[in-house]
View 1 (cartoon, protein in one colour):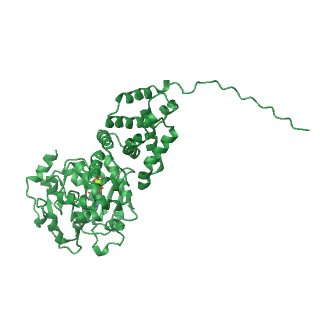
View 2 (cartoon, rainbow, N blue to C red):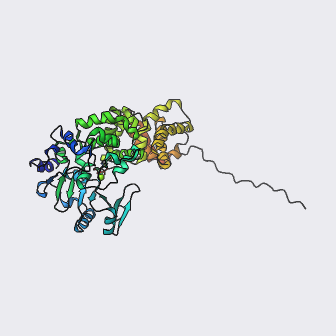
View 3 (cartoon, helix red, strand yellow):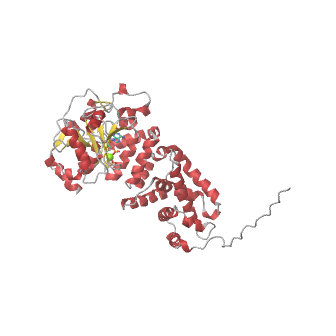
Length: 458
Ligand code: ATP
Ligand code: MG
């Protein structure tokens, strides 16, 4: 399917009026630079024509786009605005993959979008986006084309740069250049169903290559989360990161500590959702990105193997909640800290679990409820590792978190080369839990004897 889709445009010479954008050329990004100041597209850049792939030369069909997104695109277009499908949706459709969601780009301002749709809500304190709500779960996000601000416009505080970048309206071309990778900057135009390419993304899709738009060290310094995104797309799409981007990552690795933890956390969750956490975090560890990115977290081979197994389950349809992801990251180091031979009291085990999770949870400001669930799973794994017949077993087997903890324990056992029989024993115990005898012998409670109250005097 992917091949069929790509061959559609690989057979053609799609044209670039400015051939410097052709990504086959190793110096392509160098030659883009004349239009950019240190990797940022200059506001006064000459208007260069994009490559246009007409409908007959690509395989994107409107049938693949969901009805509500089409409705939004058409209404914008019929009201005289440009209306493009943008970002990952276009990339995935061209690759023959099912997009996670569809985003719309337009030259209508958020206020103009709001006027067109009764069900429109403007969201975002920092950057205004229009959400067209068809139901609670079905929301189409519409963003006005934006541009990179010039260097002089950037605020002094570098942590503010990302947000300012998100806020300057621009032309479609400027909007393409503010994006992270060439394959993420393609537009699908509802006016004539063509694909518009300002940055050489089509050639990169064909070559299965991840190329940064602009100068990689500059773009990574501007937003270090892009380094993690590069590893994510490399794993998700099975693409290779181009040499300049790799060098840019090597140069900018330490800058990851400047990334807002909330954004890193969001991208991390994406890794678990897409079943690539093992691959990406292992790779991040190899290049020295993991530890500073996760507030001092140290990965290890058993954990990466466990994450690979978890990713396998996600790929076969099981949703990975954040609490499970968190417990999966820490279960191996936690169990190493609590060897079962030492026969610790559960209160001590609980404290070890708290200490293991605290730095990470504080760094990412993880909600108490999620922490708590992760902690329950870790303690469950300790109980499983310790074996059956301990105090409190009946209550433990009845606890709602225990089956999830067993699923994690099973992954850990497989990843660490442990004894699978231990898992089977507990699985049987869970199945038969209602027949498990109580820890305490059942004694009939004697009715409480009434104390004779002293009779009131007088
Ligand atoms: P998916 O939704 O499948 O995970 P995506 O490419 O759509 O992948 P999103 O996080 O939804 O990723 O972002 C939408 C688009 O916004 C991207 O395709 C990219 O063009 C742009 N984008 C996202 N994050 C950045 C960033 N940090 N810097 C520049 N552009 C970005
Ligand atoms: Mg997306």
